[in-house]
Length: 113
Image (spheres, rainbow, N blue to C red):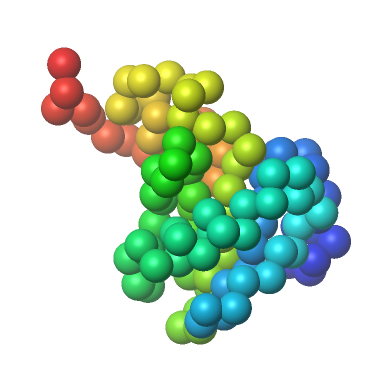
């Protein structure tokens, strides 16, 4: 995908997209309403290498998708954990729908009552 696609996607999804290369973080979307670069830098330190990582950081979910060995696509939706359901299974489905655009992406069971 090219940068203009991410700019449009960021506006439609109300999210910031960053391309991370080692410790260099570049905003590739056009929707920088909340300036989430510091949050993306913190998430980069906490990610699981070479795997899809979703982090709840300061009440915001950060989705990190590895592209190759050196590049990571980072998505930070502007909606935060205070605005979505508290049920664990519904939260994972919400994340899947925001990141991948499909409902009921994750099939998980909560061990919490």
